[in-house]
Length: 113
Image (cartoon, rainbow, N blue to C red):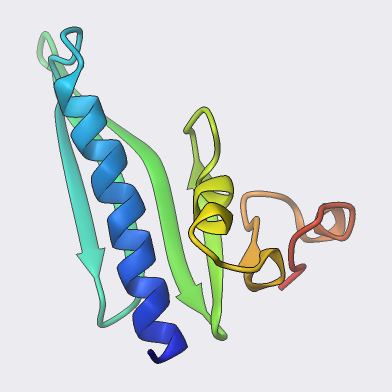
C-alpha cells in the first residue's frame, strides 16, 4: 500500500477510536467532531460546546501529513497519538512532534522535520 494512503488510513483509524471512546463516557456532554481533510492532509479531533452564551472549542488532536511524514501539531491525549501510531507500525523516524519547538525536537526519539 502506498505510504500516503497508509498514513491517512492509520490516522483516521486512531482518531475514530479516540472519538468513539470519548462518546461512550457517561460524563461526556459536549459534542465531538472529526475533521478529515484528505485534499490538504489535515486531520482533527475537536470538541465544541456551549457554556452559557459562550462558545467553547477544543482541539484535542491535530495531525497533518507533510513531506511524507506525520506531523503531530497538537496532542492532548493521555497516551499520545505517536504511541498509537507506533503501535500500528509507523516508524518513529516518520513522526514529527510538531508541537515541540524545532530546536527541542532533536532531543526526542522522533524525526526533527
